[in-house]
Length: 331
Ligand code: GCU
Image 1: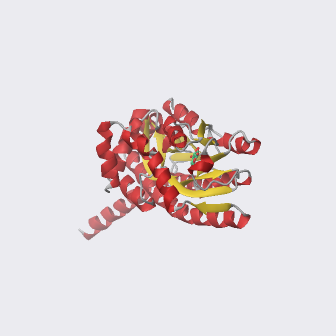
Image 2: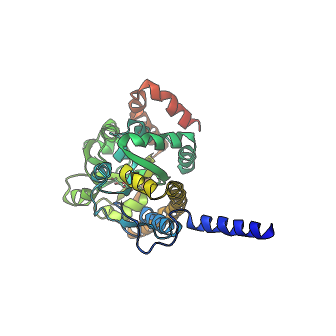
Image 3: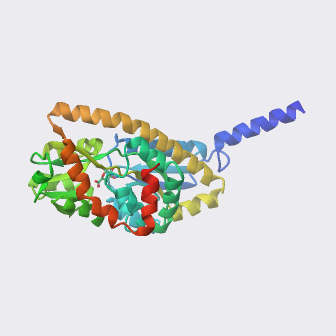
């Protein structure tokens, strides 16, 4: 009896360590590509590497994922299109990239939706976040987990203290009409362009500013041309790890148990990313302040003016989704 228990325990342990796909593979059964448009040392890329390591360990080398950082596999929309045809297997993208294919995710682009980072993560880790991950299937890809990307702030080539200074400036936004609307409501001109084109657009003066979180502002070098950073915290755009349907089919065919292992690794990678994120946000802010970036905050009055200006974005949201906005606000 005792021996049987011991044998069972050993088996359970072996299964827990192996996860799926059986014995140590001599060569990977599946080799996948993972795209991220951030550089190697960025929190999302480190989390991608961590995810790849966990998957390799827990499938005993049967599934190997190679991470391609720095946008070498293309900009986020291009990556998404390639994933829909199975050309790229995994990616981490900003939720904005999904807005056209999965209108439900547009809700995450609403300015001033979340009170703070904790509020956002609570929503994403609950029923609403699960339902949005599920909705991502509408883009013919599978959403695995949510990453933190902090608050986005405006930065410009000339100082901006309020709406009057923004008037007539050209501000880059991600490829989203919804985000263009935000900038237009503030009285500026919006230009949509892919992330990797923003640096030269700022340098040449094609645009007067852009908006992003501290780590991106640092990693891209945008602060060199646009050294005025305004802490208006207008959006918190979470990021999402995706797997293509084609890759998921291959994983299930290898061993149906691998799907759960993959999900578990993704969730652990998300927790890891969120920890790295917190540290990176503080480190990037400190480094940039040291570099001489001019940081300013909005006065109470201006803060209200920024919020009031974008109110139509809430009102124009389809009535069916007003209840969801309320639920998020009250979470
Ligand atoms: C953030 C995000 C990127 C995104 C970029 C952008 O940096 O991490 O994935 O492409 O914003 O503004 O386009």
